[in-house]
Every structure is written in structure tokens, then in C-alpha cells.
Amino acid sequence: MTSTKISIIGAGAVGSTTAYALMLRNLAAEIVLVDIDQVRCEGEILDLSDALSFSRASKIKRGTIEDARESDIIVICAGKPQQPGQKREELLENNKKVITSIVNDLKPTNKHAIIIMVTNPVDLMTYYAQQTSDLPKNQVFGTGTFLDTQRIRGLVAKKLHIADQSAHAYALGEHGDTQFVAWSSATVAGKPIITFEGIDKKILDQFLQKTREKAQEIIKCKGATFFGIAACVSAICENIIYDRKYVLPLSTYLPEFGICMSMPVVLGKKGIEKIIDVPLNTEEHQLLQVSADKLKNIISL
Ligand SMILES: NC(=O)c1ccc[n+]([C@@H]2O[C@H](COP(=O)([O-])OP(=O)(O)OC[C@H]3O[C@@H](n4cnc5c(N)ncnc54)[C@H](O)[C@@H]3O)[C@@H](O)[C@H]2O)c1
Image 1 (cartoon, protein in one colour):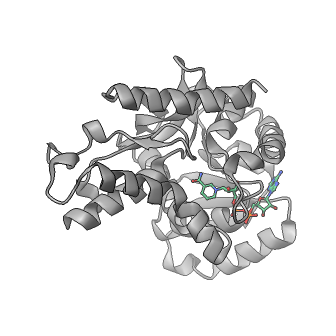
Image 2: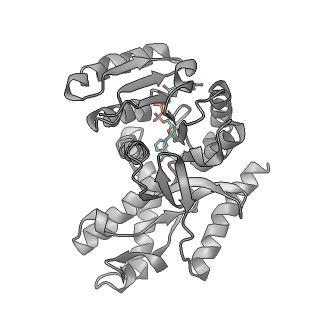
């Protein structure tokens, strides 16, 4: 058990499921949930507290933004989620206001804290959070294409009858419609995935399409997505707490593009330690530029 304090701002479907995942992984001594809907927040606390005896977390409580300031890790998942058929960028106007106000209210933030952005459109929310926060950029990042990467790896692994963890492929760029997979450097045991029997360009394109559409597929069936992202956030927290330095695709500021989007990064207790300059072929470079141009255009509006 660590003595880590993790605050989750936004105790909706994503926030409460993240708290549950953190509890079951025994990652934090104290979990604080913050929400403007105090009744819902209290209900989530009461429900989660029933699971406390199965966890080594000592405390889960409802708190305020002021309580969150002193945390080691602050997860922000407040704001509107997508409705069926709605694009992530349609949430921009509302969620930008929510995020900038929350990050402003977090100041002065514990100077060692890490802020993990989850609210969509996550690349733009990460950018605005970095602009607003008093923390260095490497301590403020977004979940980006981590979940998409897990989805892609799952599809490849199923096709090749291997474990997901043995499929080394990254979804990169925007967490949205312009994301792409760096197939040219995707391997299993160093062997390019494209060279495996039963895999061709058409199948890889289908994997990408399925990944891009998966959130909407889930939202159409049950109204929201939360288990996958909660598992991703808890894995990110574990990396930070134990200074694991795993390489994960996260949304971070890329100076050459002037925006935040996903590239593989080394993650440790101080946040993002290094951005990996993943080798891309000409087509993938163009796709990364397409993601960057889309995000840049939105920011400059
Ligand atoms: N990055 C990803 O991969 C990913 C995956 C799933 C969902 N999301 C995003 O996470 C966000 C939350 O989704 P959800 O399903 O939990 O939504 P939800 O509606 O269930 O919960 C959102 C919560 O935010 C709270 N809130 C709003 N403004 C607030 C403020 N100023 N301060 C504190 N709390 C505030 C609301 O009261 C609500 O309880 C959405 O933007 C969604 O698109 C991101």
C-alpha cells in the first residue's frame, strides 16, 4: 500500500468506475471524489465504501477542489459525455469552460502533482489544461489513444491467437476520427504484424475502423463507456506511483505541432519523462499531420 492521495474530479460514470478500479488495485491510501452534483457524489461514495473492506485503501471521501489541490494525482473526468451519434469535438464548447475553470481553481496546485485529463475531446482538453495550469507540461497529460491502443492490440491478438500484451502496436495522433496505427513499426516478437499469415492491409484497415467506432458502438448500446477508460487511468496511476517507466501512448504537448496529441511516452513518478520518436513511414507522417492540422484548426478558431 502506498500513501498516495488521488483526487477524481467528476464523479460520474468514468470517475466512479476509476475510483473502483483504483480501490481494487490497492493503488491509493486516500481517494477523494469531487463533483458539482453533491447528491450523486455522495451516492457514489456510499456505494464505493461498501467495497472498501475488499481493498487496502483506507479512505474514500467526498471533497472539494481545495482538497484536490494537495493530491499526488488529480484525475479530471468532469464534463459532458458523448451522446449516441455525437462527435467528441461537439463537446468542446461546454467542456472547455468546465476544464479551464477546474484547473484554475486547482491553483496553487501541489507542485509535485500529476494531472491526468480524461474529459473529451481529450487532446484539446489536455492543451487547455496545460495552458491554464501552474504545473509544467510534462505533469499534465491526457489518456489520449491509450484505450484505442488497447483495442487495436486486442484485435491483433485475437486474430493471431496470442496475448494482447505480446502485440506491440500503437494508435497515435488524435483520440478521435483521425487517429491511425503506426503499422510500419508494429510487431510481434520483432516480426512486423503485416507479415503474419492471415494479416493484410485490408484487415489492418478494418481493425482501425472498428477501434475508431468502438466508443460509439458501446454508447449506442448502453449510453456510456467507462470500464475500459477506468482500467487505463488506473494503469497510468500505477505507473506514476511505482515509477515504472512503461512506454504508453498518451496525449502530450508536441512542440513541432504546437498541440497535444498521442505519441508513445516514458511515464514515471515525475510525469512524462520522454517522448519516443516512433519511426513512421511517409503515409503515417501524413496521417499524424492530418490529426495535428485538425486539432490546430479547432484551437485557432
Ligand atoms: N478519454 C477517453 O478515452 C474517455 C473515455 C470515456 C469517457 N470520456 C469522457 O469523460 C467525461 C466524463 O464522462 P462520464 O461518462 O463520466 O460523464 P457523466 O455525465 O457520467 O459524469 C460527468 C460528471 O462531471 C460532473 N461535473 C460537471 N461539471 C463539473 C465541475 N465543474 N466540477 C466537478 N464536476 C463536474 C457532473 O456533475 C457529472 O457527475 C466525458 O467528457 C467523456 O466523453 C473520455
